[in-house]
Image (cartoon, rainbow, N blue to C red):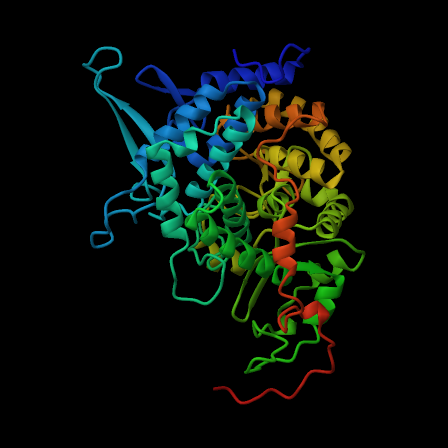
Length: 495
C-alpha cells in the first residue's frame, strides 16, 4: 500500500485514502503509468476507468510526497508519447502539440499477460461535447516540473521525447491567435469545468494554468534557450494582464461602477466597455467588507464576477497573486467560509447559475443543476490546492481546520467525487465513489500541512527577476485602479 506520510502514524482516513490511491494504479506493460479516475464498486460507466492528465496531477502530488516518483516519471513519458503529432485533417485530428485529456489501456482478452495491450488517447473526439482539452498540456508541464523539484532529476526534461513534447506544447500555445491579448481564448468545456457553464472566452482557471505552465517551462528549459525566452515574454504579458484586469476588490468595484462607456482611442479608461449596471448586487455586498479575488472571466462588454476556486487558489500557489492579493483572497475566504467551504470541500464555482440563466448557459444540463457538480458543487480535490495556497499565504491553520473536518466525512462516504447543496452536505447525486483525486487530495494536503518545512513541488517561490519584469512597464492607461475617475462621460458615437 502507498504510504504518503512516511513512517509517522497515520489516521484511519489517511489509510483509507492511501488504499483508494493504491487500487487506482493503471498498468501498461507491467509498469504503473497513471491512476484511473475512480474505482467505484458500482457499474463501470463512461470513462472513469481511464487516466485523466488533470486528475493525475493530484495523484502525482500524493505520490511525490510519499517518495513514489517512478510512477510519476512513467506517466510523464507515457503522455509525451501520446502527444498529437499529426497535422489537422478537416478538423478530425488533434492539433500538433495537444495533450490528451485522458488515456485508457485496452487489452485483448485472448492475449496473455502483457500482450495485446495498446493505449487509446482521448483528444476530445470521444468526450462528451467533443471539446478538446486546453488544460491537459499545462498540467503535464506542472507535473514535469514538480517531478524535477522532488527528485532532482534534470535528465528527464532533456530526453528527446520529453523535450519534443515541451516544444510541441509551446509551439501550439504561443502561436498568434485571432485576438490581441496575452490570455488564451478557449471554448466551454475545455478544462476541469467540462460542460457548458458560460465560461467561453478567457476563463480564470485556464489563464492561471497557462501562467503556471509557462513558469514551469521557464524552469525546465535551459537559460539562453530561445524557446525559454519566448515563454518568459508571454509569461510577463499574461501576468500583468491578469493582475491588472481580473482582480476584484472594493476599490476596483467602485472604479468599475463609475466607468464611462463607448470609449474609443488609446486613452480609454474602460478598455473592455464594461457597463456598470452589469455588476451584480451580491458582488458589491461580498466585497464591501474587504478582501478580494480574481474574477471568473473577462472579455468585451463582459465581466463574469463568479468566484472560481481552482483559479484563485492556484493564483496564490503559483505566484501570480502578489502578497496583497493573496492576503485579500484568504480574508475573503475566511469571511465567507460557510458559503465557499461548507462541510466537505471547496465550492468549484460560486454562486451557481439558476433559473433562466441556468437553462440558457448550461443548455438545461441536468448534471449541472444549481448546487451540484460544477454549478456550485463542493469538490474534495480542491483540498490540495487549498493547502498549497494556504501555506504560501500564511493561513495554514485555516486549511488544517478544513481538512480535519473533511477527511473523516470523506472516509465515511467512501471518497465521493463531489457533494451537492448550498453547504456541501449531500453526496453528489451522480457522483462516483472511491474517486481517486478526492483521496489523493486528502493525502497531498495532509503531507503539506503536517510539515510546514516540507517542499511543495507544485508551488512556486517568489522570482525577483520575474517580479521586476512584471513591474517594469510602469503605469498603464489600462491599470484602472491608478486612474482618477470622474463622473461618467456622455457616450461617444460608435465606430
